[in-house]
Length: 419
Image (cartoon, rainbow, N blue to C red; front, side, top):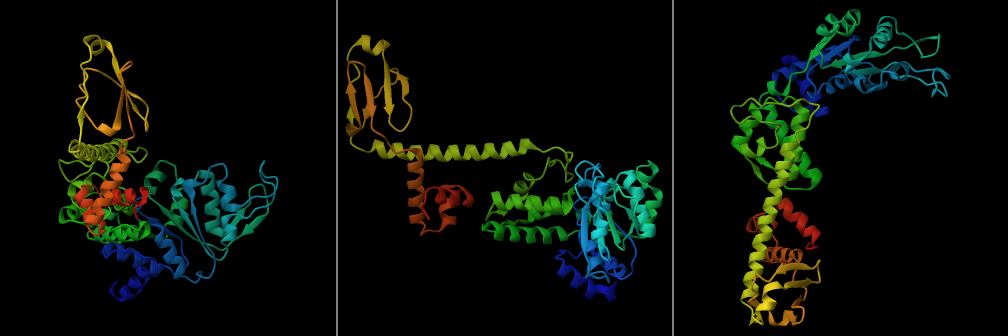
């Protein structure tokens, strides 16, 4: 493989393939080697491992590179219309067939067609595909006219087709026609330090995309990245880094922060317990939201405490509430706040001190009208403004002083128009 190294490097740069793992280089090198030879290729690998890059390499390094390249996800096509999509149909073939239509094999004539998740094809469609592979012939749905096409087929699957053949879910003759050349794409967990390279690449990309400070990984987080199984492979890693880039922008990520973004990570050992792909772990999502709400409540309590300290130092006068025993026993005090609904409180609470300018009393009903005070939003806005002034407009320092994340501070600055 050493004589192919320059070609491998060029292909990886061209298709933005990140990694230096030997198994990955071998797969890229095999794709380059087989590209000029017009044979069918089967790409095997787990879901999310990056199988889609290899048919592109094969097409671009083949004599067909100036013709069409069409990628088809067989698993996403409804069984009732898959034959029409692949081979076309004639007018009147079925209810919605209002005109003749070319299929993918006809459109890709002279080029390359990539059949992703080929193991999901129904048996009837597998028979049609076998005929195309053997003779280049096919029939449009609803037509008896034989058409010809000259396409190269590259297929991919994450299924064990040998087992599928044994269960008669996949045609044995089609398997051998597709698997003339096999390329094995390694899972992410087998690629060693490529995980760190990809994490750094993704974090930089998302920081630029969302215009947020980049996240960095402490040594403990790097060890966790390397020890985790990554059942969803590169696709899962990219998803996790995107979440970190959004919610932990500018932070140095440690082991515990990273694990909170991994699904059902077991703290007992380095083997994660992974839920099925059809379910979503909402409990962790709720836990993160609760933590955020508790933190916000703590910040609000601190702001309220500071506001009370400022008010207690202002001039005050005593309100005499001992007018008569009858009044004190049964009546209820009504406090009117013009910025919200009325708040009722029993007169078990003694209103010993109030601001002189903010109150007037009506003895008959013992109704106390209080003029509008600063809302929590006003207090929060003012606190953030003063912190920014004290720190010379440096948002990171202001966020540290306020004990909130930079992302939260950015949002508050925008919300309150403090840019």
